[in-house]
Amino acid sequence: MRYRLLGRTGIRVSELFFGAMTFYERGGADTARERLAMLDAYAEAGGNVIDTASAYGESEDVLGDLLGERRDRFVLASKYTLSRDQSDANAAGNHRKNLTRSLEASLRRLRTDHIDLFWVHIWDRHTPIEETMRALDDAVRSGKILSVGVSNMPAWLVSRANTLAEWRDWTPFAGLQVPYNLLNRDIERELLPLAKAYGMTVAAYHPLASGVLSGKFTDTSRPEKPTRVDPDSLTARDHAAARAVRNAAAGLGVSPAQVAIAWLLSRSRNVHPLIGSGDPAQLADNLGAVDVELPDEVARRLTDAVEFEVGYPTDFVSVAEADPWVFSEPAARIDAAR
Image 1 (spheres, rainbow, N blue to C red):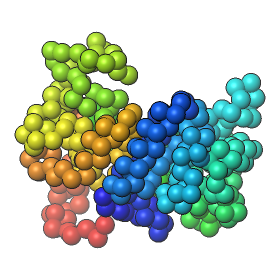
Image 2 (image 1 turned 45 degrees about the horizontal axis):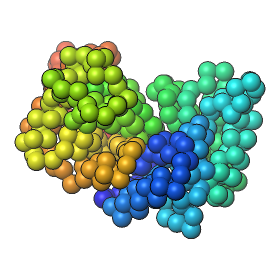
Image 3 (image 1 turned 180 degrees about the vertical axis):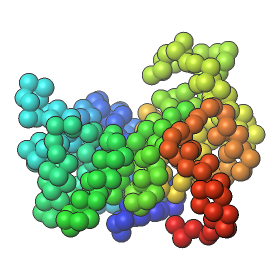
């Protein structure tokens, strides 16, 4: 596995991130051994980013037990925002009070004195972004977190947050965590261009579209085991994407899941698929995606398998750029600096 830099920091992060949301419940001794085997396999493959959240059940506690003395071998990420107590209005949100209490609780559960990457979990419309960014920067300056990221927030607000951070010498968002897969390409409209412009790392969750792109679903058969997605709910668009992934996998001699993840890796160097495997075999298969080379023609067929429009204003501007009436005839020969 190769490494890239986390945003504009110097922290080295692996191509694939490991999502520990599946560690939601502690389970027994057999479950602990299986999870330890998964972490071992991920580390042996070169993976070094483990992602969890305060709201993922017992995941932080489980990781605190499993990582032990290896904790510093990983870039450990967690999140705050979601409610710690649904009867308390201030036990949720992106304000300083909830950040402070959530961070302290996460540090205790993870058995560590700092979190390498601390995510804002979701946009809180009631908390000014200035308060959130200043509170995060204070936590960075205290040494309790090293870098910050954001998830589930509109592009205009992330841009405002990072601009404020730049002007006021606060810590900017280094990462962006968003859903991204062949069926869900919404981030290509605003969020992915934003991440490229600010040099942000993109942690792509649901890389297999909740299993739709894993090869389990075909036009004529149903999965043998229960799945998160009801097979009867799949649309013609879902089946078209799943079929394209299966066909590409058959042609390359790899698994459909590997093709779906490799497609994400081919979209941008900013993108890091977040793999949340349920067992060691599934994890091993997903890790194999880093060795899959997608020929350009295969990548194009996958991209074209389902309809997607970036929309206004990007499509409008792209058409305008090609018109000499807009930017002049020589504009077509400009070698852009960025």
